[in-house]
Length: 546
Image 1 (tube, helix red, strand yellow):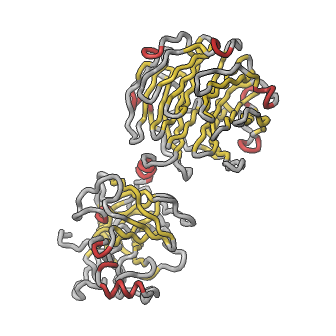
Image 2 (cartoon, one colour):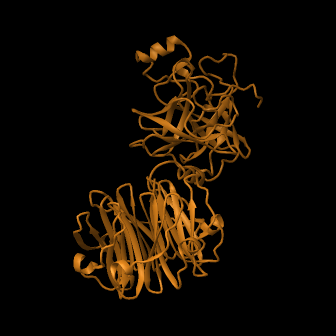
Image 3 (cartoon, helix red, strand yellow):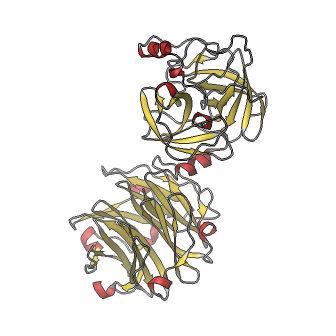
């Protein structure tokens, strides 16, 4: 089709004529028209389809879009481009842009364009309530497949329809980025429909409307009869959408899972969606294999500390934009430790605290916001000895570093105040109640409270307790009613947006995840999608980033 074809995203329907604007304001066009270009949607149908307005006043542009997550929509890039086909800059829209879903109006806060297709993922200022996002098709349609296109563009009689309308189209041909479509029974794509969903028979999203000749649309030459159109393919974009959403500002859960000598990272978004796992050593450089690892979040950055096969500790950062730095040797800047067996990290403000077990003793260092490391210090020098330590866990609560160390199967607690002073070790069982021998431990802070999660009795029992901000302890509670009957190889915990998140690796090769809400209720435990993990999962660790 020639470049002279009309673009369905060029002019906002609300800015076509003053008469049309006045009519809409007066409610005179509230009753949807029965249009040649497609039937109006029934109540509740196409609820995921949005009416977009880009800009304000007489120069505003109208488009359509489709909800792909509670806080994100997909639409055509031409809706935001100065000229058709131009690349759209990532970031805040150049002009104020809003999406309407039924009675909800939400502003678009960030645009995330795709390189190889003229589509844009738009971040919404808040989640859309009560609307189920569309599912994305994994593959494009074959020639001859009948599809349904929907949008809020002009109809035969209305500049601004009161609800979304749709029509049937046959797939004529396809290339890597677009579909060629032909309307059935007079259906056509009009101005304002650009970015609207093109759906397969099962309701999955295969494309977004882009260009057409505009046959049957109000304002088009009545002699125009061509109902063919071009749509931008949206199939196969599910992973890209999830990964792109993971780069947007907002709370996220960073997860590390070991698999053999490898280390892999995934992100859980606020709506519970998980990205696939990616190889940390492939991104940040090989350390020759990983024996232990821990993760911490500082603002939007993810700090990863690993104990490598050579016995040395290494550190890297995944920046908020998704780029990884190279691993660097911590011992080269904080001092050498011998016989390191385990490590735990946490952020206290903008500082990264690293606590390591070496030779059965606990050592501590701090990396400040400027990137400078303090020398490793033997914690026992300030807290007193506790015997051979096998595990440590850390949390940030109330501005203080809190540490649990496991020695002889017992969990012991200490606190490092913001002044740098440490308290003496205290036996957690004496404060929170007895358990069997501790096999794995995790900590996380929410506000001033420090949550402790332990797996005991060879991992067959799991418990949760809280050290409150005033120093008192809530007793250990059995997590069997939350996690089910599992044998935990490792436990992990993180404070994310004021809530506690817990993950366990199970003996049968699963990673389970749950959330303890601020009202003290627990979410249903579910398995983490281990896509991208090359083998059985090993130890897991969690952190929150904003």
